Length: 273
Length: 211
Image (cartoon, rainbow over all chains, first blue to last red; front, side):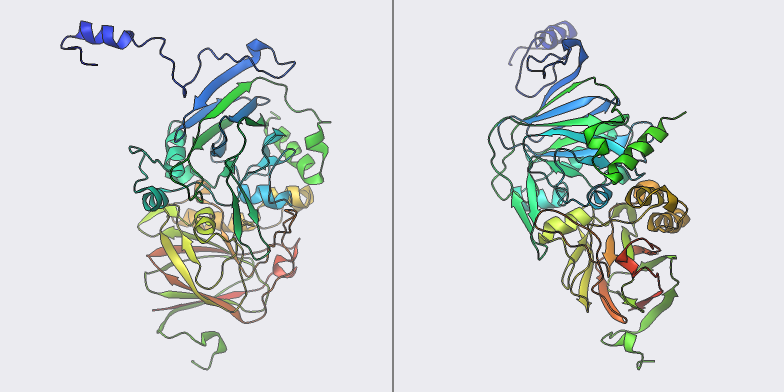
């Protein structure tokens, strides 16, 4: 753009001329999606956004909302934080999530637990099953070593600082960026404790659906996994969310184990006023 | 004094020496270059352990950064305990236990209600110890993150089943940590009585700091 914008009228015209520009990574407002699951009405849609490789997003979600994340090209890595929207001092506790459910590898049927013993979100569908509860987000120092730069303002932003920006939009700060779960990029734990990465690239289009079990602040960073030794590789992540019913008492995820039953009892108790 | 077997192998002068009662919290500043020895006095006593940078306590121990950097979930001799900013806070310079845990987190009244039932709600817990110790310094619930569990054993089976099992520690076993920066150490001497992490019998531990 080389036009002279020396007066506000020209600057306004220039700015307004951008209307309608479509890029790969952007939100769609109002949300529109032509691939909602059967039974989901178009007017139930609440969020449609493609998150750039290296980007982030944050959003408040109502209880019962379904969030579908799609690894569009096979190299997304969704580092996820969850907070109780009404009291963000309550947040995802990844150690409790794996310990309480006796399972190192969250997948379909797993419940993401808060540090107050409550169900925050359930994994309702998972076509990936390669996730990571252990390694957390990349940090600036790690990206500096690997890519020569890790700052938000550079070309290789780190996941922790992306999460920090997303959390800060809700009034949160460095004390609030808690241990996360990395979705789509996975690890396995060997008997001697070795972390064995499973980082793909995977086939395009793998989807995961989270069901919000409480009113949530969700923060997602989409940056290369901290153990990904390739040159900077990260592809867009699509997020779609729609309204849904609050989980019923006979829900199969809820009733699968004693620990999950009690986690849902505790969440219900939060909303018993 | 140096006939005390708990001091074996320590070189510098002892600047602090304290018994932490069973079930109690503990907090202490350890300056860069000093060494903290934690002694499992009676054996198989989980010591839940957090670190905060003394100059900026929004920088704190990060289990996930620690695991990612060493590509291993177990803490052994040589493991660097990294901060949320990816910096070394303390390094394990020696331990007579094969490995220590950093994936199991801390017990809480709330998680006990999931793991064992609501009848355990009134029992004391590590998170309550962490809160008590942190509140004295102006930190609070938001400052509690995934911790180290010295002398605790949490294996992961090939199918992903994970859990706290019988300990691999024994009376008098130790872990030595060299401070790589000035740190605030916050400990819960774990009061859990519903799993094997303390042999179902919480006991005292000893903390020795050498310069």
